[in-house]
Amino acid sequence: MTSRVRILVPAGALGLGWDAAALELGVSRRPDLIAIDGGSTDSGPAYLGQGVSKYSRAQVKGDWAVLLDAARRADCPLVIGTAGTCGAASSVDWLVAITRDILAETGRHAKLAVLYSDRDPAEVAARWDRVTPLPGAPEADEDDARACTNLVALAGAEQVQAALATGADIVICGRTTDTAILAALPLAVGCDAGGAWHGAKVGECGAYCCTHPDTGVIEIDFDEGGFTLTPLAETSRATAQTVAAHLLYENADPIRLHEPGGHLDVSAANYREMGEKSVRVEGSTWVPGPYTVKLEGARQAGHGILSLVILRDPRYVAGIADWCASLEARARARIEAQMGAVAYDLRLRRIGVDAALGALEPGRAQPNEVGVMAQVIASDEPTAREVAKLINPLLLHHPLTADEPMPTFAFPFSPPETDMGPRFEFVLHHVLALDDPMDGFRLEVLDV
Image 1 (cartoon, rainbow, N blue to C red):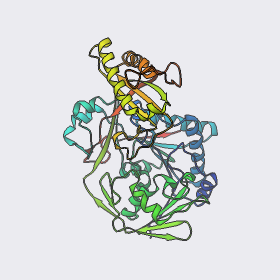
Image 2: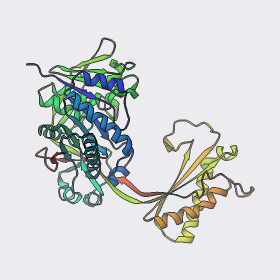
Image 3: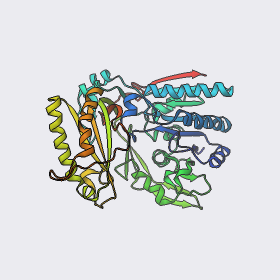
């Protein structure tokens, strides 16, 4: 008997929405599983540091209610990975509470499997001999691990398979690799391992691997020879190029993708367009290796205050690098004179010039105006605000040269000092070796 699995992916992440007609078409085609991602580290460390979602609760609840109903009508499980953006326990519980509310409001019941990915920072520190830095990892030691406010391990296919094996209607996972929630079922029923991981990687973000990516909904058919990917929106189509290119999405190597327990190799993959919309892929291989899980941890790095000033004078716009350098030198001297050897971090980002890339900016064109964003981070809010207030008069009146009339620039809001709250930073880009894939992962089953 040939192993076949059909997975419906509604969107790149819960909270982004999708083409409603395409989702209805997907439900009518009787998928074996509906799977959607719940988050990532794309939006920085604050969400993991605080254990909260970046998405609106109202949006998430509305979209999740639609998917709960879709899975019920398709008579298949619904799986979400990295619930609540960061996959920490608090964000997982947030989505569980939303699920309870939806079920109560609709008068339905369901069996939930909840997979927690959190790690005790002290326990990770105690096992530091089993932790290995990945290329580009920051310098970190046991004390850095202990300082994390939240620390998670990225679950792979095995942990998701354990959750599915409970027979749950709904599986809510903490932090997982983006591919795990799609690869788990095809692997469990004997589909081609290379095709399972490759299809999961291509389909992780829904229609991002197709034309009209904002339509969201795709269908992936896995079997013993590979996979076939089909976008379900009327306007969207997959091509060999759009599918092959997705190995570069959030992945530095277009040939290899590392996952817990090995890596995917697509060097021999063949991409064949089928009909007007679909792409068939065969020839990918899975290479087993040591079982490791990636660790993600964030810690509080202080308190932030932000100020923004806008400069339009063409002379100042042209000389913005010199203006910022002299302003910063003068500001630091003033801060030391008034506050002594206080610890703080000050960064001036030139919005419209090189705020994103800094020294890596490949070209220069003079804009009409420049926004200079002064970011101050200190150990606590009063210190950060005092530093920002010392900088305030310079942002408003600092001249480009010492002998010219005093200028005045524009603050877009008053007061210009905006509280950014606690600031967080990523601590880990490391892997933890496990003898048992379920080591440290916690699975709970709830009848709701």
